[in-house]
Length: 180
Image (tube, rainbow, N blue to C red; front, side):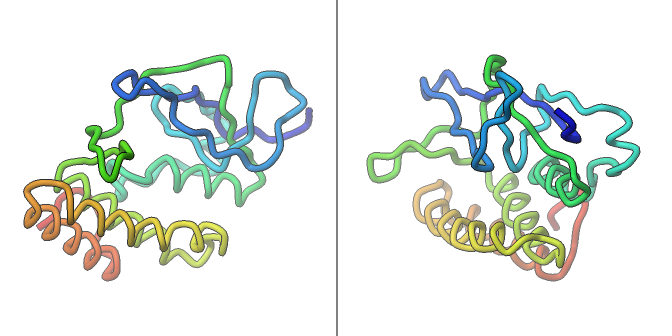
């Protein structure tokens, strides 16, 4: 169809929740049957053409664990490449541990994982090339994430400590693996 393809990934589901993860469509289905264009896909189970990696560059090791694939897809998009979900291909992928808060099941993680999630979100928000749409969507989400996990994830003090450290390191640009 003439579109430059960055990556094609599966629909993700988590059998523990008995539901599939929500897709985040870019607002249009492709004429190519079975594909849905999205802002990003999770790298697990995805196919990326080698020539695209040569053009876009590799994934940033400094992000470690969280937002590695999202940042890459957003960078590829800036270069005119699109990311797709293959709707007929599914993969069970457990992201975090289910936790019920006010009648809604959400995913929670270890304090260390929350560190990386917060740090890498802040790092991404600081990138000049990030679209206003992403900033608008992510700023409230990170605030809500901090609040919910600090209130309900146990032990509270460990989650607070690691999320605040992630916030500080994200603001100061301290990247890579490690959280001291």
